[in-house]
Length: 355
Ligand SMILES: NC(=O)c1ccc[n+]([C@@H]2O[C@H](COP(=O)([O-])OP(=O)(O)OC[C@H]3O[C@@H](n4cnc5c(N)ncnc54)[C@H](O)[C@@H]3O)[C@@H](O)[C@H]2O)c1
Image 1 (tube, rainbow, N blue to C red):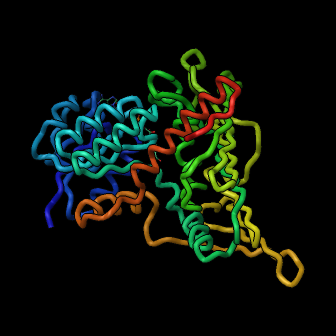
Image 2 (tube, rainbow, N blue to C red; image 1 turned 120 degrees about the horizontal axis):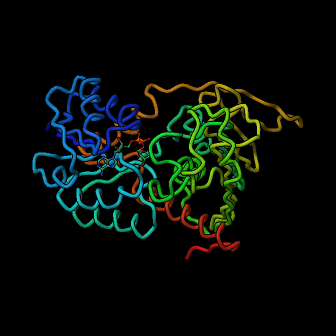
């Protein structure tokens, strides 16, 4: 098997917490380039992970043009996702581009079409679906446990957890706020659970009412004078088969939720399920009527690899063995289309219909 040469473009948080730790565990890949406009950051990452042979570079155009690179991981702020991905694909690289895949649906479509035309693989990073509880839920859905699923609520109410670093609070820097950050994961989860990305319409609302309430944030205070994005959004997504998805996500909100991350609650004609409590990622609660009475069953779940490993291992395996990545590029593009529709709906007060 060929050893794949990998370039990391953007050596920030997600590079350090997900991509590099998972890649260095594999013996069929080698991180040969670390690219960041902040070369001191790239140097620190090189040292942290003992990537002694990796070259430091501050110009992504050079990385894309390098014939020795097989795979590029695009881990920069969102507005750079499309230009870097297209340039890398056009130069014959496979591309893992972090979520959201792009800031506009037109860009996301262009990325998917380019990957198809050049015959290279493309994926995006909505790996939260690969936590043990959602995987267990999906298994039960496939077995028909819930009957006809007609409503899913997808929540990510973080209380006080706004990423007060990098460009997250800047519209030009990040393309948007919580909708661009937590949005892709929470919109993806119900669609992935039901294998249904067939959207009929979207009605959404965004808020920035908490932008001046900086106190108590788990990730430090932000500067309200440099904050022109939404801190929360809510959306109703109606699918072509009639199923309703309600998504509620907030970086900052005065609403208590025992589970501080991404959860889903599903309602089917035979039974329902949700993820609750502090161990919500590993715990599915099923409710159903047995012998005329409501019975609640708690199921602990586990997995043999973390969600980060699942994403990266499937990605590299897909390149090495010619299969599909875990997150399909068309799915990632649909998420961008929904995000765009939520912004449009919030701005106009209208329901946005898909063709
Ligand atoms: N999948 C997930 O769960 C997840 C989690 C966090 C972030 N992300 C995504 O990862 C991306 C990066 O987020 P982050 O939290 O790591 O941000 P970050 O600010 O920590 O890191 C971004 C890095 O990109 C670098 N950069 C900026 N412009 C560049 C350029 N032109 N060339 C090369 N490098 C450049 C910055 O200097 C910085 O080091 C975002 O798209 C974000 O949405 C995904």
